[in-house]
Amino acid sequence: MPAFPSHAEIGGRQLSQLRTLLAAMETNAFYRERVLTFAGTSGCGSIAELNAATRLTLAAFRERFPFTTKPDLVADQAANPPYGSDLTFPVADYSRCHGTSGSTGRPLRWLDTPESWNWMLGNWAEVYRAAGVNSVDRIFFAFSFGPFLGFWTAFEAALKLGCLALPGGGMATLARLRSIIDHGATVLCCTPTYAIHLGETAAKEGIDLGTSKVRVICVAGEAGGSVPAVRQRISELWNGARVMDHHGMTEVGPVSYECPDRPGVLHVIETSYLAEIVSSETGHPVPRGDVGELVLTTLGRVGSPLLRYRTGDLVRASQTGTCTCGRSELALDGGILGRADDMVVVRGVNIFPAAVDDVLRSFPEVAEYQVRVFNRASLLELEVTVEPVTESTDTTTLATRVQKAFHAAFNLRVPVKAATIGALPRFEHKARRWVRDT
Image (cartoon, rainbow, N blue to C red):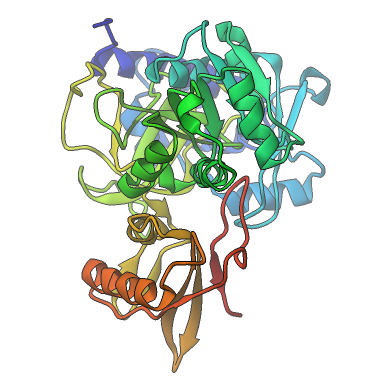
């Protein structure tokens, strides 16, 4: 087993990188005043004095430095178009521009210097290494290359690793399947939803995925990659291929990789990120094992950093210390459990989309689904529509079985109805299956 840094070694690296990051904030309009205020609360008159001797500690930073939120960034870019003021260098020093999907508000534009870009590629290399990917692999990227950062970092990290990188942009699903087989691709990168859609399309079109050489499927973009039923469904469709989850965001870059020893557990790349888990309500740290919101500081993205950024991702830290894989980096049980703004409370029960996905993906007869959220007599309610895989499916029986599964999982009666084949939308990128009545 390779030697991994200890918890103490990780902390030492984080503090060293944090010092470098804070020193660079002298020229960052977005963060300069925040850092100076933090220095003042630490009894320092300047950023340089804060970094001197033992003035700066990780504990003090976590306790006193203010959070950065998505609304902060949206407001800053609106006030300072087009890129905002979270730029440490002149715009001429930046060579990359990417954007968020805007699924939780106004899209953000994000710039990166070559140095920050290479830092992110290094993080993606950690994802590949944990998945057992190396230079002999052929990686097929089953997505259209748009403005989202994850597509490009995954592709370019594969190139740096020496892999044969196969772009699948601008191709229909059937063409992608044929390309995967023709090229002898050994690794597939896509969302969990699209991995299922590819597999189901192959079955419908009579394409035997037993002839495919895909052995690893790297998924991201949705919480489903760490949901047991989703993982099992993908693996079954792809002739037993191993599913490896990871997650990241355009604002912060590639954040985590799946533990090689514990499926469904994500390790945060703590040599690159300072991570915290806090209560979404109070902002205070939650006890280990409790669900909280992931907060990240991007230690190596100096050109456009985020300090104590509230990601909105809900996670639970593993109770164990050093993992069985030998790593001491923060382990998240179940990966990303959901979004703080996606959870709904139905008759006093907290419902997360990932939990609903886990129930529905346990039914191989369900090809796709949609969840409607609405108010009835001032109370929030759910209604689920399922689309069967084949026309021969007894949809009445299927809807009844799914409804019983929801009751067993949540102790709630959730109405379930069936749609005709092809009636529900399919998703190549992030699936948007939850519909809220306005």
